[in-house]
Image (cartoon, rainbow, N blue to C red; front, side, top):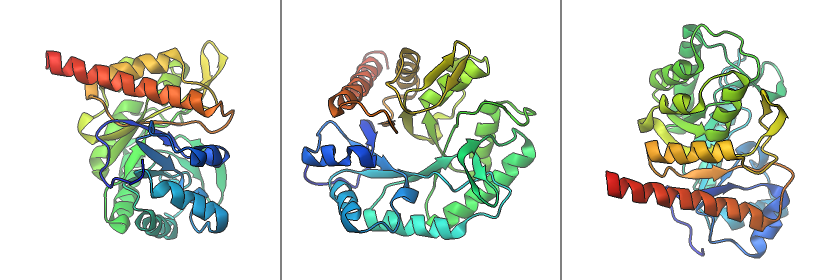
Length: 284
């Protein structure tokens, strides 16, 4: 792929660009990758050889960015300087969209983990106001990701209703993480398929897909450090059947396998998308 498209993919399989695999990907840029995603906090104001590596990829693939530290649900004031930096970074690299976690990661300092926001009406209004401010600064819509969590802080609302309420109140989009649905459904004892069906089709921009760690039969840890498991593949296929062949980003943050193994997972994503598209053509 020699020329980057500015068109956001309507389907296709993407890969998260991580520094440990950048050199291998540069040596032979795979045609199997339809788009890439990076965390802007890891690359803003990075120059030198690393900056050149990033430019190598942003000139060849469509890019989206997925934030780590905006802390949209935090009690601390919104970090508007970070949002301005992200806007500049998006313009510099022609990034197509910005997403963040529907969570928070600290108050005065970062906890380096994603903390659950209370599922309450007050939290809906608070988060939505902050999202609207981010969108005003960016001059475009952002997407929020459904996150994995282990101990809810308030369940006045259920998780699905909370997500839908925030999206509606903020008038923003959704980046739906398939693995997080699987992890939460096991940890919090609900049906993953039923939850997935409650997500608003008209707000979904793309999917995340990743592996997780099996701590126990009733406990999963969202690590992004393993191959995608069968439950996530099954739910992804069901999501394509329901929502159509939504663009899907494969996440892997450590325990990197050979590049060919990651490309095999991307090819499996694409096969499921093709199957869903063919089924829709026959039965639609």
